[in-house]
Structures are given as C-alpha cells and as structure tokens.
Image 1: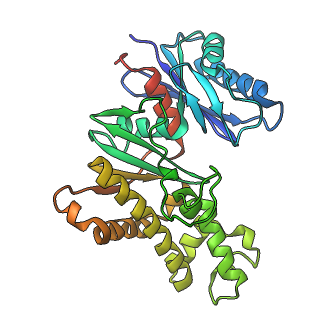
Image 2: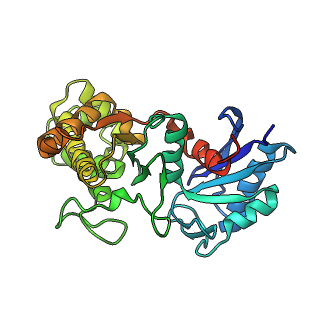
Image 3: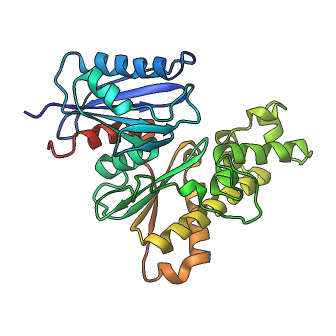
Length: 318
C-alpha cells in the first residue's frame, strides 16, 4: 500500500495540516497557531512539529507545503511572504521540511494549492479547464488547463487579483493601482461599507456594527443585504460587478468550462454568484453564447489548501 502524503497550509494565523491516502481519503487532520514571533525559524519549526505530530512515525510519500506568497516552486524556495513574520526571501523551505519529515517536499502558493484541491476533490472535480478566484484578505487564483494545475514558465501563473480593472483606480498593495484586489477584496468591501456609514447614509449597517465601522466585514455586509437593506445590497452588487468583470476577462482569455469562486467573501453566497453571472452575461454575452461557463462556489472551504498540497505531494501514488 502506498504511503500517505502530508499537506501543510501556512496561514498568517493558523497552520492547517492533513494526512491523505493515495485514494484521497483524509486519515487525520490537525491545526495549530502560527507563531506570532520568532521569525522564519520559529514558523519553520512549527510547520515541522505539526507535520511530525500528524505523521506519528508513518513513512510519508511526500510533503506538500502551501504558503501565502511568492515561491520558486522548481527550487522549493520561498521568495516573498507578506503576512508571515520573518525574513523569507531565498529560504529553502522545501528542503528544510523534507529533511525534518523524512520525505520529498514541494512548495506551492496557497491558492494554487487550493485550486489543485478543488480539482481533485471539490468544485473542479471532473473539469479539465477552470479558473479559481479566491476572495479574502486579498484576491488569489489558480488555473487548471487540460486537467492539471497550470503554473506557467516560472511557476507564478494564476495571480488573478492583479488584473487591472480600473486604469486610474486605488493603489494596490502590489505597488500598482486599479487591481481587482484593491477594488474587490474583503478589506475593499469593508472599507466601502465603512465609508457609507461614515458619510451618514441611512442604512442598517450602522446598527449592525454598533457604530464601530471597523467591524464592517464582508460577512456582515452580506447579512444586512440579505435582510433587505438597499445600501448593503448596492455594495454587494458593486462587489459582484467587479468580480464579474474579472471573471469575464479571464473567461475570454482562457476559455474555461467553470469559474470557481472561493474565499471568505464568497460566503455571501447566491446573491454574489448571481451578480457575477449577471455581469458576465451583460459584458461578454456574445462570447458565452458559443462558450458557456458555469460560475460555482468552491466546495472545500478552509481545508482546500492543505488538501491540495497533500494531493500535489502524492501525485503518481494512486
């Protein structure tokens, strides 16, 4: 029987891990806090400790590590982790964890890993061509082409959040401006809601946040919109329109069968997805007549990255 593979998903707050058999069965799962101090050394040690605890002496076929930033996947080296403390540029994380856990290790960007997880076990299962858009603190993505994860020439394909939607839009954390991430990420939606309350608009959002505009999260906006508040509904419609433009741009470029929408903002549910579909129909309806596309929610939730990393590490074992 092939040995199981281990998936580690490093987040700014938590480390999530799964142990996966060759047929895709989760043997065990574990989560632990990401060390808030101690830098890259402490975080690497915590990843190794979580992996060791989950493996519990088993021989592993491989270790997949999903990280929230830029990696050199071919060399197993981290380049940039903006939300994890420490000096990461050039750190050979794959080699370090492989040595600690006694198995070959591979690095992936976290949303690319989640995309692979959805391909193998979730909303992309059985689909040879799809795009994933993950909307949370930022906007990440992944591409599946001909039934496999597409990483591009340098392993960086899928940065859908830095597609420009507005030539003169707000500055983005990447250094550019007008990016989808600057306009439609979770913080962007929360900031738009805060502005409406600060401007004195009549809306149930003020009562929902108790007058504390810093509490206006996308989830709260979606709840207030679902209760019928027109201002919150307009904010959610604007979010859906921006994501619909992004999805439409990707669709005419890549001709996917599906657009999978995940991340925390996607928890707004059916109204957000319907808005994305409506925008796509209005803007690229001519294209969709010949190349129809499904817009569906991601299926694996917060475990997608760990599952995808484990499956990526265990390729060829089934």
